[in-house]
Length: 236
Image (cartoon, rainbow, N blue to C red; front, side):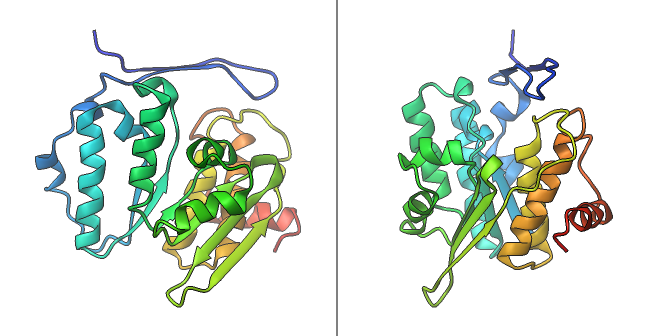
């Protein structure tokens, strides 16, 4: 029997227990031939998560193949490590392969816990430098209750850093999905060519709004709702 189950409970503190089984999912059997059918014309960003690479050898190779194809089409690549230790054979393999993928991408977006696991560092600046030294152009770290951080190296090798304080939700219903919301906000900002601080601001807003709603995706806001939220917090 193949494992394709994600179970999530309810919790008064917004931190429900979750059980995650995806080793036998359809994505674990993805073929490179199918990926060659993807049309990259007009694509601005290829966004990748680390889960596919952990499901199987085919998933890992598929991730590398997508990166190769995106490079051939001069498409920007963003990467959320999205660590799920239970789907990997070992923590060592998870770290090795996730970092192998990360160094091939333009923008790497771990949360603070993932950054520590992957780099062995405790300071966000050191975490960012770990990847920038390997050729990554920008590292964006979700520090959760401590806000968010960005460090970018431009084409002239000038460093640009930004920090965004936490945007607190009006109430916390469900924390699951807030990290994905942050990443979605940042990537959408990049699609609109927002500056680094505005990308952090949008990501923080989407993550906060997501926590006000029950469910992983149900709270994802429209652009107008993000603007209204930021206005209510006095940010814009």
